[in-house]
Image (cartoon, rainbow, N blue to C red; front, side, top):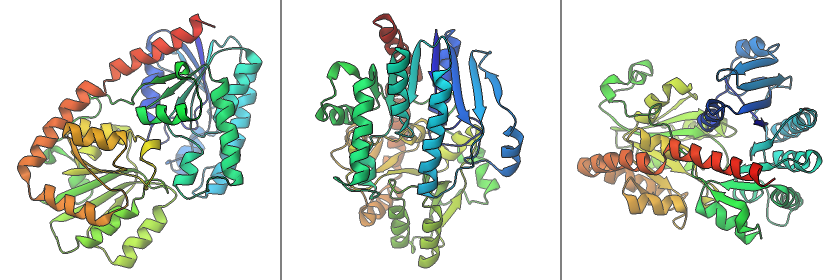
Length: 412
């Protein structure tokens, strides 16, 4: 069996879903499936030396030779939304052409980043007459509206809906990461028999709790292990509403034992740093995205982890960082729509506390509550580890993905 994948990024690039992609590629390869991938040369989260190193590395083999990677040249990614959108479009065009001339492919397997890649999958499905599996990690164009980048009924929204409808109509099977996502697609008249719900997962052998005394980031970043740390690790984008964390930090300036660590990068990074500077905050520190080898250290740093998004976006996103916090035994504050699956899951299972999104007062009050209740924090930490092992199993998720692939091939 040969599967065609067209990712936007690949190692050594740093991006939030890297571990999900790598786990899938590794598992497919371990099952004897041949994976063929086309991806731009690295530019996201890497330095100029790395970019130059990979400039002429056009072909590589991974995972015991079953993963065949072809890189192509493309201008570097920037923080500009317009330039990034153009780059995504150009990359998708190149990937379509390369996919079109790739022989002996049994399945096209694409993930919804960027959303325009769905058109590529749909066209390859129609032209090459092979099954197309589409994994929805982000619902577009709903996300454009929720982040304020567009509005319902605008030209961008209408184009997005055309892309979405064309993709869903031509996908052989659609995998979504939550029941909320499934409900969204059903409202758009996507046939239920096309939809499979497979939650994202975490490999608890690669992300696990690290005691403060053994966490080398405390010394590396000159952090005192005696303070109470609030950690946000991930993308600094429009959708994440990280400014709420900074506003919460402003409300807690007088609590000198509470420190906020913002780890990551993205389009809003400079704006967030300017906000911290304008508030003259001493309790917020920024750090760059870390390599996969350091993720256990990152997600174990905090006494509490933050998962947040803009109001109204809760049902259109289920961030994989949730599982990373839980695997590290870090309780979460979910600054998420209260009617979302994540909020309900956190409250009903006891590994976190859900609060209204974009509400700095609720966030600061909840932080104080947890800071002042060591027993509750310990109970939530223990529950987090137990929950993630039973509900976000990598093994179970991999089995489900293979079942979907086998199903579409056998019925094609």
